Image (cartoon, rainbow, N blue to C red; front, side):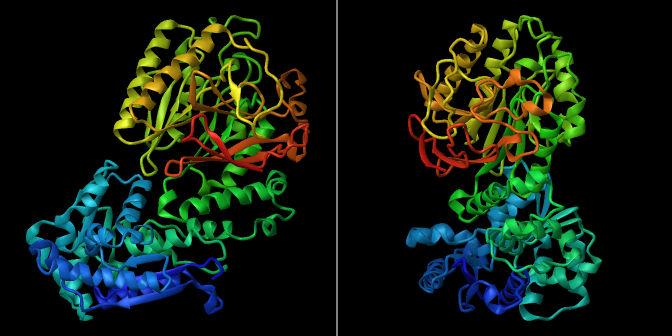
Length: 617
């Protein structure tokens, strides 16, 4: 393959499991020509001591670690850059091996971690574990699953003999009715099951017509698919049959879409493709490339990706385009969010367009136009909180996925992404009741403290942008000068409150990424002199003024937006890499300002004070 991938396998634990893994490799990487597959190097080192006895009885541990280290070092020397251990129990000895060969840490694919992430992503709360007694007693799966709040159930110790008989039957390639009965009785006990020994998937395939378990997770196969999803030159062939997909919880459509995403995007842009997709073919290809880059190495596997827009102001046509793009890139983003000003003018404006233009899964926060009773009214004159909550949150929160934390009728909430270790906090800067302001500030302080304790990186979404802000020099910062004092003082104070609370979080060791906001109807990357570590990322208005014939909303914009053309749309796809401390932005829609500066992509390093531009196109 042209991507330079060479897969290494430490096998022989046992041999038939290694043969099965090689078969899975051939199926996961289908090929018209053999050279379409990545190179694979297998060391079937069946002479190694028992991994289970090494763990349970401390038997020949040094000998085992030496042999594993020697094989893994050999795979590195052979040019392998992704290495699999075809044995779950063998992963228990990786910490000792990494001490001897540190460079292995970036090459070894930890199949336990991959499996646990897949279980968590499927929102499974309880899973049954089958494996060797070494794997079960080590709690390597139980401890990893508990970090995501997932209960792990294992067979009783008096059932270990039955499991051992099943595993040994595969090692010896000798099967019997007793083995079949034992395996089926074990695997069918619960709705979800992890096959935590590399011999067990062979039994699963042999007897799967009799398996009733709804979700069966094969760590090696899942890891191969995750690796495959990082590659772009995969031939167009079927991946796995539908029965296997249903049993493992892996859908063929999911991997087929990932494969198709790797095709040259321009080839997909035919007449039947929606205009917004054709107009933005290169940008959408960038989003897909961004996704592949983040999946390609363990060091950046925790990236969170959001579609971000703001100030849609009732523009149903632009909202529909956002939904079309969201659907197109759904395998490459975690969520979409609108940071305020959903309705056209004020509280009396209709919100029906939101249901017609979107599927209701887009996260929202409150903007000034969303709550004012009339355009000239004081912001203190707002509908009751319960009415605002019912209109913008209550109807849709069920569509926002798991891990959303919200109480009562509050207009603020957060959503956790536990696999990627991020917390997205959504605030309401429009409170005019000082009691509610204080309540939200206390809540913010508490959820930041909780996030720090869980080692979550934090992103805050809110509508406003500080008046006294310093723009960071890049094409994603508008050259339009915003007049100071455009916000009423008490709303400016809201931002200052947030910054003070976030600063405490940062000084306590918390990883604060940025604010996502809007309001200005213009792009900006900025910070304030008092809190230089806190970056504000604002996006131009998502509405197109020609669509709504409300040119007075063309405030702060520095680009001509034309209905029916690429410039009609304006929103970002943003990826947050907590390991590299990078924020990566791809623009969809209007990508040139009146000065002909290009807003294509931007990479920020948020670890510096203030954030610095790494790359801007």
